[in-house]
Length: 430
Image (tube, rainbow, N blue to C red; front, side, top):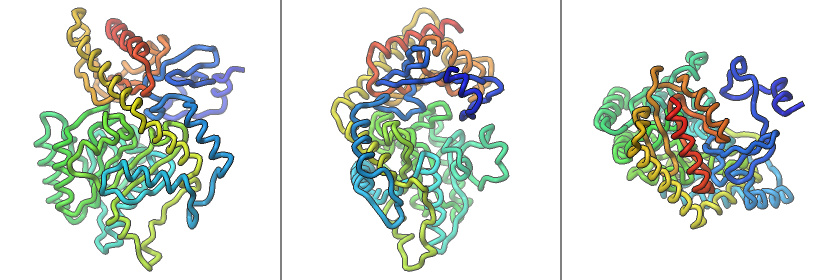
């Protein structure tokens, strides 16, 4: 039996309606930019496997470091114990993060990193004797699928069955171009209404991923953070997706003049090698939990908190991020994206009429297509495009009618050109 047929009998896949899509492609190998299926077909991973494999698949340097750690210490309880990879990783991350970040809390993935941040913010005020229960978040946001992260995300199809289990969140518009003033006015209004009830403002800095790679302005977001700070509201930057070079800077928060109080990391943290999450915070937040009173403890943890193997993978990924060649590749991809956008804009075959908007930031490139259906995650053009690109040997997973590229930093110009030409072919087929 093939992997696909065996899988079909026993596996329940994420974000998959098995009644419509009962079969999954069996992948047996990954190398660099490529994935290989059980029939020998090669695919270019144009989205870094859900935005994680920033250095490509099966990177030999990361594999070497993980292998060495496996022979030394595979895991140890992280309550009352510590180990070298966790301490070193925290030290190195804090050197890269905004200077106000002073403490690292480890968890298992992006959703749990956000979950920790939410609990930190709620209990921070509780410990200070000023309990606050409301949160501000952007419309169309996505922060994860656990209940706290889901509460802070856009209410829709993903959360509809659980809407009565979610805590109250105040949703406002993100400061996209030409709507900056409205965004600032909106947060001022909500802060004035609920000043003493709002615990935190959570946001995806610069790019809202699942919303369709929607970009917003750093200067305006900084103003919104300042408004929160002036009104004793904590700010949480969800950098699960935007961290580690994706936007052209190490962290998207590097674009901000006002820095968040809490930052969430995952995805590219381990170079896509292992599951891991990080929540960093200021010393002031940590100190609100520092007490002789045990009831002020942050009662949160995971069996695999600060797993040494995951920490070692993260350290190896950081080593690669600090290489000059990695940043040269990030700039090269950005340059190639710009050239392709210019080509489309100067096209004489009318394909620009099929695009409602082109957005780009760092290595992120997105085309929002004009369709008769509504603009949404469930737009019917998604299934057509997935099939088209898989037939071309390209892994692209559109967000509804938003086709985006998020390639590993090791992708070649040749592979980028092949993807670009395939996109042109798809646009011409519409």
